[in-house]
Image 1 (cartoon, one colour):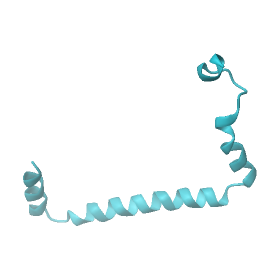
Image 2 (image 1 turned 90 degrees about the horizontal axis):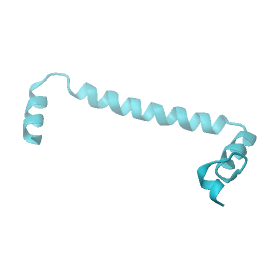
Image 3 (image 1 turned 180 degrees about the horizontal axis):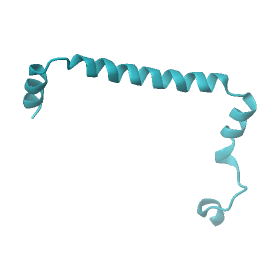
Image 4 (image 1 turned 135 degrees about the vertical axis):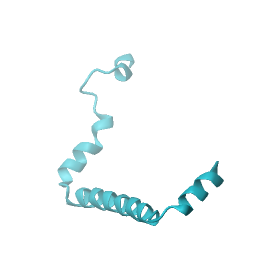
Length: 65
């Protein structure tokens, strides 16, 4: 199966473009995420980090306790 794919892709022109495009999208996505985290307010980060510990809402997990 892999031999068929490699042979098919080797015969096509401009296939390297798709590899570069996917790498560029991958890097840009994580750069945007890192920039958003870096610019986020510290109070927002603190609030988000306490979400798993909050027991304000009744959920099936904390209803048993």
